[in-house]
Amino acid sequence: MIIWFILIGIPMLFGLYAQMRVMSAYNKNVQIPSRGRITGREAAEAVMHRAGIHDVEIVEVPGHLTDHYNPMTKRLALSSENYHGTSLAALGVSAHEAGHAIQHKVGYSMMKFRQVIVPAVQFVSPMANYGLLIAILLIGLLGAKVLGLLVLQLAAIALAAVTLFHLVTLPVEFDASRRAKLELVNLGILDRDEMPGVEDTLGAAALTYVAAFVASLGSLLHVLMILGGVSRSNDD
Image (cartoon, rainbow, N blue to C red; front, side):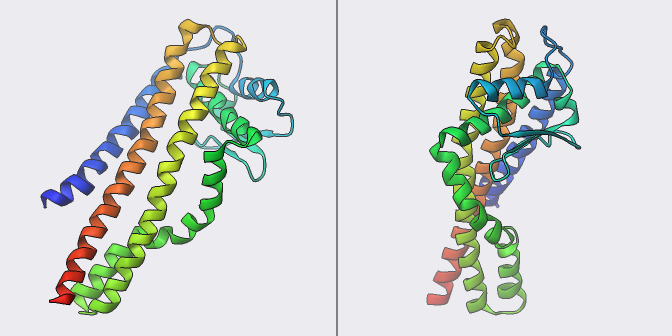
């Protein structure tokens, strides 16, 4: 029980805290208008144009914090509140997504590697999510230890791939935020004394990626421990 709490419970609580933190930071800073009154769309466009990027489409999408950049389609999507918003939070998030577009243009290695492993991660994610449960049902209820052991091994491989994805995501997201904060000041979109609101918003968002990695790593270690125990019991 203690091991489960350390590997699963604590990361779960950390994830909940990260979600609460990002919502709190965003909701606070979305209420603070920037002095320049530039919209998120205009900020993203300015950041990309400074980097020589003129072929990325900026679109408005529904939802809350649904902002993302798709390197496959060269499409930068901003949620309505950030697309039209002029707040510190809106500008920070919009510039962050533009940071991903810059990474794509310059061939940032971690972003390229993440894109390479995305198809594999998408393929194995169902096993990562449900492999342990299936193995428990096979071994505990049906007594199929050999098949259950195989499922556990597949779950461990799947979780290793997902954990690697979350690990690679960390430098990608931190670098995009670094580029965003730098360009917001260099372009004169925000004054330096406005940057704490942006840093607060992006820092809280980054915490969610850290939480995702910690949760994935904890799940992987948990499955490996169970796998080791089942393997030893089969050898006895």
